[in-house]
Length: 164
Ligand code: SF4
Image 1 (cartoon, rainbow, N blue to C red):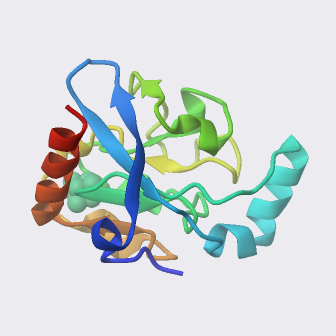
Image 2: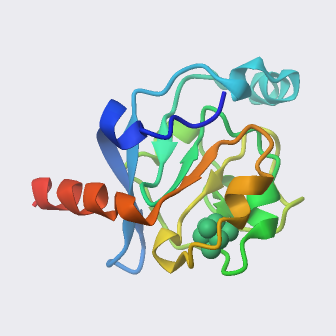
């Protein structure tokens, strides 16, 4: 199922993912819901191999948003992005996806399409702030898990204000 294009209106922020530069972060929106990831045999098998529960994890990012419940770790967005907005989160921090809420990342994970750890990995918009709005990632994602909308900056700013 594609990302809900209206996720900032239909979902709530339940955490944020900080960049270790101390300046940047992206919000995490939920609740998540079972979607393409949970219907993919490859993804289910990867979770089973890790003995991890496949649970809804929501949307990471606001202007550059990836629905982690739809993401099947294809990597097309990672390959398409000319400015390396995304990284495979597990290649920096190999923990269950639910533990990436309120986590901090350095952004030193892999940005190679085939370098995911396995099919439980997710494309993380750790450098959301560097997006140049080319839309390449949106068009290549097989399950349409990526939404890029510069105007969603207002939601990012609203949440930032409310958390101060
Ligand atoms: S819109 Fe372009 S620059 Fe922005 S994250 Fe997608 S591919 Fe990267």
